[in-house]
Image 1 (cartoon, rainbow, N blue to C red):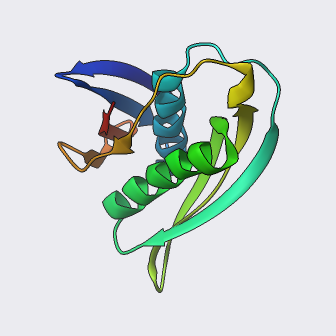
Image 2: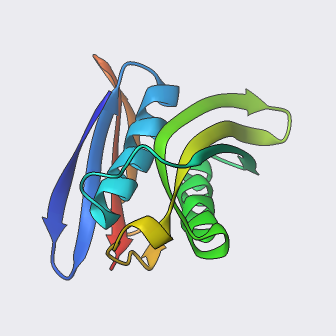
Length: 136
């Protein structure tokens, strides 16, 4: 699983790949964290979250939005992201965890929101690819 930060006009984008949809969700989330801070310390406790949405793309949006919410409410930078994605009778669900690095330990750049602008989530020959633009 890997990600790259991409310049995008006044915003920042994350392009991520992974062998599974689980891996690509985690990689995009790690890319979001990297957009806010380059080299987080090892401090911080893991926390869990679950989100459900009607489609995979909506789920990716809601998952990343929840990580930004957790940053704002808990005062942590979510790093070391792990995700399990599955289709359910209600749509799509992600059960995820992250290590929350206290923002009091770092000076993070602000990412305001995830956007649907140019969002892509697709199966490839090698696994999965995602492209997500964040408003900074």
